[in-house]
Length: 122
Image 1 (cartoon, rainbow, N blue to C red):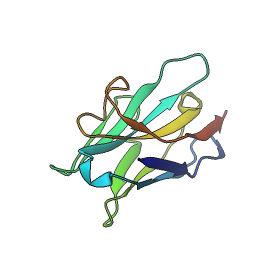
Image 2: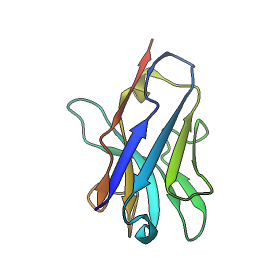
Image 3: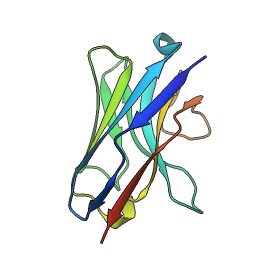
Image 4: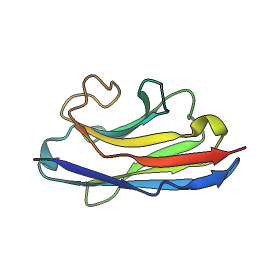
């Protein structure tokens, strides 16, 4: 059984910063990648960032590239998302994800966290 728990969501003003964390337990050794998705009310879940353990490569959606940074700690059971220069359109529930295969498609991801709310006021 896999458990993912996010934290760090908050309400901030435009241009502010937040750091989200995700702690994983269970069969973390089988994960090929971890990532972040977000979902606003009434909208589909969209991919934000991914980190692949085998290559130590990071990938970002065009909407957050240059503003967000995904990273992994030495313990390799946690992933962080540093968010800078936040915009109102970044407002969403942010979900941590883990997968044996792919962390860029919500239809492929096997494991999800419960979500943490990020609200950016204009």
